[in-house]
Amino acid sequence: ELVAAVEGAGKSAAVAEAEDGPPTLLLAGALAVADSLKPDARPVVKQLQQRGIEVWMISGDNERTAAHIAAEAGLHAARVVAGVKPAGKLAKVQELREAGAKIGFVGDGVNDA
Image (tube, rainbow, N blue to C red; front, side):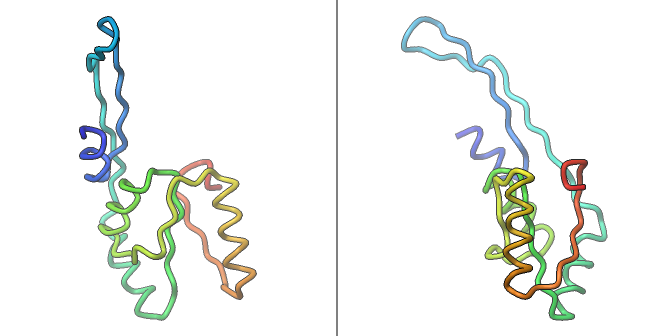
């Protein structure tokens, strides 16, 4: 429940558990971290969409976190791919290219380079 709530709010959760003798687990700690959108992200996405450009989000984040961030950015849920490692991002870009799409790519981290 805690993890789902944290991820649903657009954060990534890390939880540490400790055993107190079987079958009891105690929550030993929890951490929630989040990236924040740049202030101009939503208006830029909107401008691109108004020009007829399909905007996709291909993220390594889990589905709940990615869906929250995508909604904040104004992205269509059908154009969000979550839980993807760098090789999967490349595969999706290649799939879109093979379907005739012209590609522009913006990354937020070193692994997107």
